[in-house]
Length: 572
Image 1 (cartoon, rainbow, N blue to C red):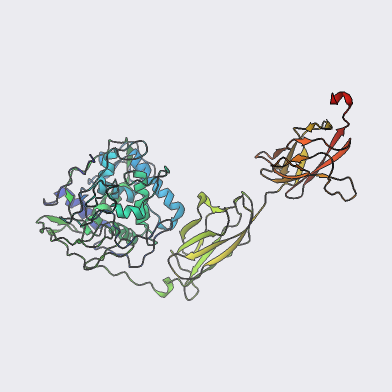
Image 2 (image 1 turned 90 degrees about the horizontal axis):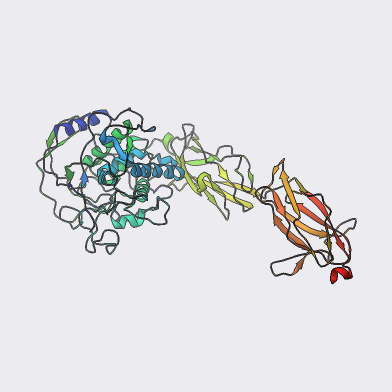
């Protein structure tokens, strides 16, 4: 039987003085006084999909409200180089920590402009499931038993009827939040990822769930290195001031330092937990619950600055959440409109030269784009998406066909290194301001065939064969600028001995795939630039014949093949 969250209690007791002090300290430092909400119409980040209007991560199921201790982890600021030991609360189970960092790395390769920090995933994972119940996962990162939230039956939570026939949550009547990052089935269908490369998208797997959560947080071209966009991302996960403060507190705590602990030995939250997931709306975008709101709590909740006052229930939103995962708040803080100098009116080529590379090599030139405003001035922090188009196997670093990056203070941004594939010819790379209808900059790129500037036979012995027998083990080596020319096309042709040689229709021959004789064949050198010719049959009158080998790039070598007359003794 699937295990459900333990010790997830309804909120009804006063928050402890220590927790209040922690929130007060955080609020006084940099936590927002009121939430900032992303505007409607945000577009998903590269590699993500657009959620449906009814999508939601976990309905309004509970989350842990434990706050980190007031003391900081050992070695403050050392989260990049994890200390071996530290406070128990700062320890993150090994597989869980690896999943967060892998998700950060993956998203950095496809949506670098998002700047997703793994510490944010860790903070959300702590609040949602206590880091997968203290890291109780198997070697592949799958929880030993499913982590399920309560049935979303409208009784204090959102009312979400079953959408997956119980496939993910085992409930065929109502949906439940599933896994260490608490996705409801309908949202997982949209945002689910395969983070561990096993060919499956499993919400119970920490690698899959962490990558899916990262994609969701990066939706809308957010830059999570800015406080505004980070707050928007957290509020998109759950539109609640309390949730934002709780996640923010763990985010700052993990940023000051953390360390790895063995799987299964993480510290579980001890409670209390929050029953409601904010403002009467679903966790990320499922719309308001249609059930009656629970009775007001008499508990006190710490507010920024350390003061407290009796808490009253939030008023349900009057309209469902918008695509992109953000419900409409009861009293949003307006986002200032960008000034004309901050408004992008176009992108242009910033001096990119000719894009040419040999098959299998990297393009020496990197694509550079500049974002500008209506006055021609630069616009910083503009999200630009580079896309490789056309029938080509060329790709950016990491094998990505599309990457998103942000412009610097001078308005320019360099695309990652572009690598040519094995397919030769022209293709196109487009660069466009992400999420806008502005025209794209188009770049033509050309992949040329691998070449050799020299080719020679590796042996020196005379090549002879009796008519009717074969020439075997003829080997050549090709080089380019003194280095082995790997995977270079070589054409081998029997030629006449005329002043202007042509293909000879007599003499030794090879066979094609059907076994028919051919006297011209195209071959390819191996990784060391070497090529062993196929079996050549000695045919025709006795004499010396010429085999010419020509590489892509124009290098040639002529090899003589001598056919000896077959004697009566040889025939017998």
